[in-house]
Image 1 (cartoon, helix red, strand yellow):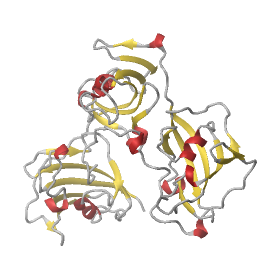
Image 2 (cartoon, rainbow, N blue to C red):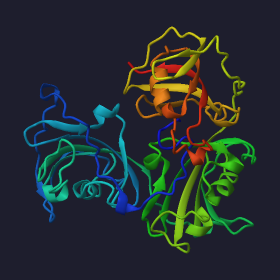
Image 3 (tube, rainbow, N blue to C red):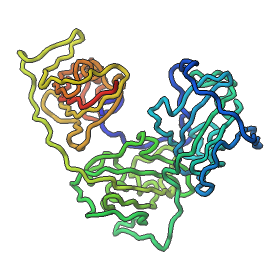
Image 4 (spheres, rainbow, N blue to C red):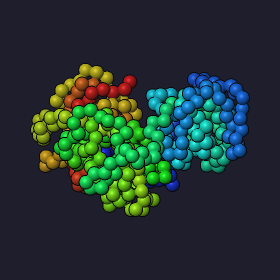
Length: 408
């Protein structure tokens, strides 16, 4: 995906709890009050020692209870005391919100409430300011605001598991692993394109990173022996898996991550990783590189050049809306630096979150269309370029883009 900050799948050297964002995320503006659902009525109110108030709206299964370090999924609606909704999963396509329990990734009231729930539990929470956003507020949430939430524990997405010593094995290189779920078929070869999910913790259950949270529930895709993450554990670990299989690995931070350690971890820190092989993919053919001839090149007022290879017949994307595309990108000398075709899957993003040439160019297209764009440096990565992607300063970029779909 061609994001303004990074082009290729980023290396997940991620901060620990010290830099974690507050949650749930706040929208840029409060919704229209007349459209807001009503605050649910309390049942029997319980007040904890911290001052959190909760009442049980649905009890859940009473069995599956999360613990510190587990990655859990919540649905929620949040109100200010005057009845205004400031955020909800309904405003985010009803996608549950992921976070690691007890790691400070969310407000204190949420961390405390999550530990009280089991799968399927719905609670009404009344969270005092000191367990919410405190004196600073957040977006539409004013300073020192009491918050009201309805929260539902959808699932424990990835629990933090301790080792089954009897089931552990060791590779020739010394990597300790345990098969949690057997997959099917053959393990991938080094040149096979694989799709992976992962989660990582310290050995004591302190969350480090995961595809669910830090990649917004997107998988890692790359050649098994050249995954777009330099951690040794990915290349070696993926080769042990079969499709649908999941393994638990133990290694020091240095053994798992190589030279680029996550901030806050010493080289000798014991870590735990879980990897799941989602699929082995077959790369799609990459369109041939060819500069657009002058007689076919059209230009916009900004200087964006484009060639219509195939006109679309569907909807036209709009700023802020999601699109799904296949693409390939080259430097003007024909050097390929990124392609969704290589990863065998299209990519989706919001217009406005990518380089300016893409933001403008996509709004010229219709679903089903294929355009080739010539993007000057000032509409691409400008003077900084993008060293990680191999894009020099002020580089002209050539993109082949196939618009598969766009949101209304």
